[in-house]
Image (tube, rainbow, N blue to C red):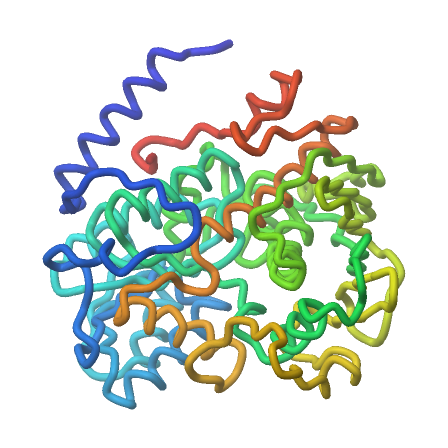
Length: 450
């Protein structure tokens, strides 16, 4: 049964709550597809000075959040940032994170308390995927720049709302698809953009299978875990150890499987290498194996064909696919002259020797590179910080990340409904299929709303 009026009321109440509680910044909405010009940050408080330390808060400090915290601690030790607070719904992880930072650092379970602090300039978000849009949007409203882990969102309309918030409040939002700031991906991109493969007609992706299972009874949550805050925007349900911490990835509702996890990385690199950031699929068609009994509902095997036009080419995502090399995932670019294997997501493993050793000839194409290469995680944070200091677009700006996560979302929807989707990228709607269009957005549980 539909209840449009109560949902509308809750969203209106949430907006009012946000205005009162989150110290929202001022400024007219601006539509800027990918590049953020310097004047976007020209208003008072919008851009920090080149030598000014950035004060950070970290939201979510388990798993990847711990790696992010250690990266920023290293930059802090160079005297360029300050870590003022950490937030985590698991008290054991919160205590450990405070020890990692050292010194006097604020701690909280509820991220909203952190966003109320006027001394914090930017936040690093590494919560489960279903939290990314709400926390990113609230951070932008509170005047904070944002580094948020991939994928940008699990619902398409949430991703677009993240882009709109970044533009309206004039914040730098970098999404953690690190391939665009890594040396191996840069080598592959340089090789391909200089025409060494000829016209690329398809890119195939291989990946290991989604795990199956997640069985077991519901129970009381561990004492250290605030279960309500972990769920956040998701519908309420009893705690089950199959949901978290990292296993949220294997539920469509909160993770979406490997295509939304690793796919967000891989699709970002593919679009960059082919200079296709402004190109969108015209159709998406997915098939997969049924999900065995258990809580985890992502298909073990899956194949998705994304078809692009003008120029014409395809991305073919397969689990398991045709594995090339020792890595459990990667991609192969097929051109009319040659092919190129890129293992993983272009971060930790060099591409084939011919691309790794390629030198750009005079007058050739030079692709984007970050100001400082350390390792693939540090590079990406450094690029974000430089974007804040210099008032420029980061290499994985939220608009670009939204376009990559859109592929992941459409692939899963095509699988779930068992039919081909014809995509209207301008309006971000599936042509002639209102059932799918209703699934492009998801309700948020009050008060964790946007």
